Length: 137
Image (tube, rainbow, N blue to C red; front, side, top):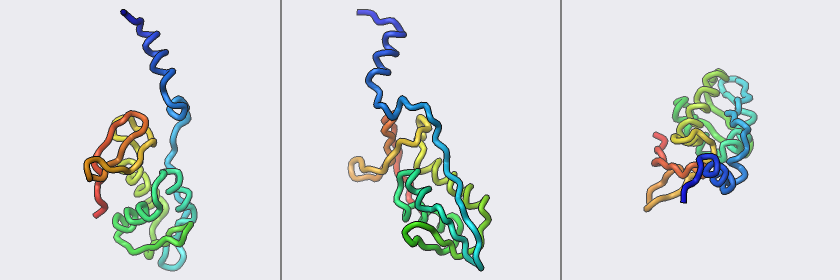
């Protein structure tokens, strides 16, 4: 039995999950931060982690390693014990998103941390792609 190209596309579209049919574009949230003394406070840290679908402590660990400064999380905001410009913080958040949130195959943000044969991986629910979860050093 032969199928026409359009029929195959219609058939594939019919079986796609609804969230993948949504054409809305994912935007990496910008940090709302300010410097207070020698500390930088990221007010919307919890919201950023929620948009990414990641644990805030994982994102914080990445930021403090990248910024080479100690920091902590108080349940809704992050405090970095160093004065850091907002542009630098946003660049680091973008780097985090590219490594740990956006799929390396299809570019969608529909990824999650899971395990495969005992190894931690990042798996894309949109395309099925996966890659090893890089440890934060």
